[in-house]
Structure formats: C-alpha cells, structure tokens
Image (cartoon, rainbow, N blue to C red):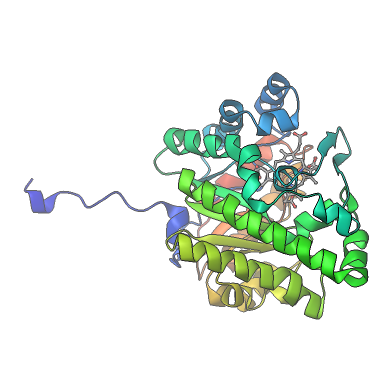
Length: 354
Ligand code: CP3
C-alpha cells in the first residue's frame, strides 16, 4: 500500500456527526439516566460509595458507573455521572437526598438568602472531583464513544434552590420571580455564571459535548419562557461557543411544546432534545427542520417492554429518519425499568430498515 492509499482518519464518532447535521442510516443512541438504579451493577457501586452524593464526588467510582452502561449495551455516548444539584451545593446551599423521596436543599426566599451564597468563582473548590471524573473517562472510554458533560439550566436549578426540593408546579420559584424579581434575577445571574464556568471546566477536562437540562422549562409560559428558559440558554451557549467554538451543545427545554420551535436557532444550540409529550412526526416537521434533534421514546416502555416497545421505537426512528437524529428517551429511565427492555430498544433502533 502506498502512503497515499492509506485509509483516511478513522471516521468521526457518530454522535458528533449527527450533531454536525449529518443524517445517518442508523441514529446513534444513548439514554438519559443510563447509569442508574435499574442496573444491579450501579446499585452495587452506589452501596460501595455509601450514598448517592458520595458516589458523585468519588471520581474512580463515578467513572465506573458511567462506564457500566457502555460495557453492558455499547451506547454511542457516555454521560458524566454527577447531578445538576452539585452546582447549588458548590454555591453554598446545603444538599442531601432522602431515600425514596429525592433531593432536599436549604431554601432561598429573600435577599439575605441570596447574599449568603458564594461567588461563582468559588464553585471549583467543591466541583474539582467532577473534573477528575471527566479526565478519567476521557482516558478510559472506547474510542468510538462520545463523552457528554452536563449541567442544569438556571431556571430548573433555581426551582430547587428556592423551594428546597422538587415541586409539582414550581410554585415557590414562580412566586419569587413575581414577588421579588430583583432577588430572583440575581439568583438566575449567579447560576448562569456558575454554569458557564462549570461546563467550560468539564470541556477542558475532556467533555466532547455538553447538555443543558431544563427539566421544568414547561412551567414557563409565553414571555416568561423567553426570559427564563430561552434567554439563559442563549447566554450560556454564546459564552461557551466563544471559549470552545468546536464543542456542540444539546439543549433540553423539557415540555416546552411550541417553545421547541426555533429554540435551536434562537439559542445557538446544535441540537434540541425533545420530551415524549410531543409526537415525533410533529417534532420532525417543526424542530428537526433546523438541525439535529434528540429523543423521544417514552421511558415507560423500558418498564413495559414487548411488541409495543419495538413499535414505538421504530416509530421514533422512522419519524426522524430524514434528518440528523440522536435516539434517546423523552426523559430519564426509571428505577423500575427492566434492563432487558433497554437491550430490546437498542436492537430495534439498530435493526430498523425503512
Ligand atoms: O443521566 C445520567 O445517567 C447522568 C447522571 C445524571 C443524574 N442526574 C444522576 C442521578 C443526570 C444527567 C442528572 C440530571 C438531573 N438531576 C436532573 C435533570 C434531568 C431530569 O431528570 O429531569 C434533575 C432534575 C436532577 C435532580 C435530581 N437528582 C432529582 C430530582 C433526583 C431524585 C429523583 C430520582 O430519580 O431519584 C436526583 C437523583 C439522581 N440523580 C439519581 C441519579 C442516578 C438517583 C439517585 C440514587 O441513585 O439514589
């Protein structure tokens, strides 16, 4: 073989190709919460760490649980194992998890609560172990697997910092933004600044893509959606692109409905992740026209399985097959899911022929 005939560079990773706008014959696939309680090996490592937060702050074990679903299923991407609520903790909030119930935090209800927070520049003291996890992963992941870093979006993070827990309607956060807008805006600005720095550090440690989770974007309507979901996403993405122009960003304004339309263009996101409250055919027509989309199989199929799972999976792949697509669930996989159903979903995606 002459030098000129040598095979070209190995093809770029499939996730990165889809994020660059390429339509692939088979969509790359990963799954929100792919490292989690539905896996026995995750539960064993969490027990070894002691509890969930100790696992997040233990780089060796956090890297181990990140790798577990890659070994078991060969997903095309690994998502850093951590949590969106580590940023509030790094800003000085108390954080703990109540088994079977979820997160608890100290609450911010007024100016003095905001004033007690640390500056954004202080977060790295707490978050240094997370950057270490990213470094381990960028060494240990298979060459074809993309490493995704992440953070919560300011609105979603603020809802937990204000209420001190998950809330069905984000009532306390809406009350603060209406009743004390100066406190609320200051909090949003602090989280935004911390998030930009946190994601930048993940990128410098080796994250190849970052995703911003706005799980509660759906409770913001009209102008409030523009101001507290779209605008912070635009600010974060603009700042990241200035520092790291080649790193793709996935935005997930969950349950945004019509708000998904034009979200990528308005914010500069390379991909919009879609929840399963919208039909994939609708999202293909209205969102995928602007570029890559990720989603959107209902995670309940990971519990129920069977032919319905195969048909729903094929429907998602078919709906998005004319444009760039990353296959995923519409939200995280739940602890009661059957690991066999995950294998069935992956097989259905990879075997699909239009
Ligand atoms: O997706 C992954 O595998 C990466 C790791 C990851 C976790 N949380 C681990 C986790 C990611 C990306 C998150 C994001 C996250 N965390 C979000 C946004 C996405 C979403 O689900 O809407 C939110 C809102 C949180 C906050 C949070 N963390 C809640 C509300 C809970 C409790 C609910 C639950 O599922 O128990 C967590 C805990 C949590 N984060 C677990 C995991 C694996 C379960 C904790 C355990 O092992 O006991």
